[in-house]
Structure formats: C-alpha cells, structure tokens
Figure 1: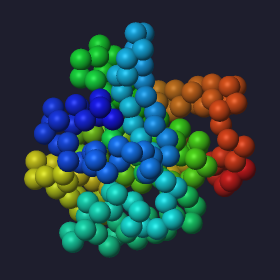
Figure 2: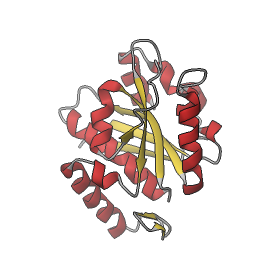
Figure 3: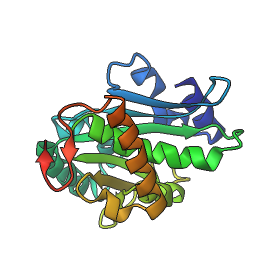
Length: 204
C-alpha cells in the first residue's frame, strides 16, 4: 500500500485509494505484489469481496448521484448471485525498467483474483487512459453507463467488468496466453482452490 500511495500521489489522486479506510486489511481478500530481483515490491493490486450487497462495491459509490448510477447498480446486482469481487489500488513503480510488463501483469492478476476466490465476475472502474490495459486481460467496458469524474474533474472514469466465462475471448492473444501459463503454475503448486470458476460450466 505504501507503493500504491506513492504512485497515486504522483498523479495527485491519492484520495482514490481511501488509504486510511483500507490499510488495516479488513476489507482486503487478496493482495498481489510483484518483486524485483532485490526483493523490492514494484507493483501490486488488491481485491475485495466476494460482495453480497451492491453497496459493498466501492466502485459503485463513485457514481452516486450521477447519471448512470442506477445502471451501474443494476449491473452489479445481476452479478452478485454468481459471485463478484472488486479489484482496487493497481499500481506500478514508475522507475522500473519493466514498467509496461508489470502493468500487463497487474491487469492479469485481476483475473487470477476471481479464479482464486471462486467467483464469475470482477467489477471495477478505470480512467479512460487505462481502458486498453484492462481490456487486454479481458475486461469489458460498460459503454452505456456515462463516465464519472472520479476521483476529480481531470478524469473520465468508466465502469468495467470481467466475466470468467468470456474474458479469454476479449483479452489480447498474448495476455490470454500468459494467463493460462500462470494458471498452470498455480495449479502445479496447489495454489488454486478446489472450488474455482470453470468457464462456461459454473462452479466446479
């Protein structure tokens, strides 16, 4: 979270982290980090959920009182019975020579979070400049929901979601291939739970 705070501060958007609310870890289900050869954390992303109520989804709060609020809430409400988590606080060290590869990894980690937690959906939001990054790992953009100005008027922020039934058909070929390689590594090391979301089959 210190790395995320530094990264968000660089953009002047640290309020989006809600650092003081989440630093105790109570709402964090999984935290993915990438380490450099010296063992320093150079990227990360956290997951919340599975959520049982729409109001537990922090992303939905970004649209409160705005056009599209009810549409976003309806989208999440339809996903909850199938399992939905939220990915938050994605960041990459700006000084890393592998910055772009780390950003791709961070996007893939969202898919792994859903599979590790046994849910079908990931709900989140993304600023316009990062949409292609998340789409590369299979995220869909809710174009029918008007963007918000979260966390401030400098941004156009869009509602996005991943569906474990379809993410591979949306993801780029290279990202889909890397996800499968990483999932194989998780399986070989016994790290995937017995109950996972099997695409097109439901819980298995």
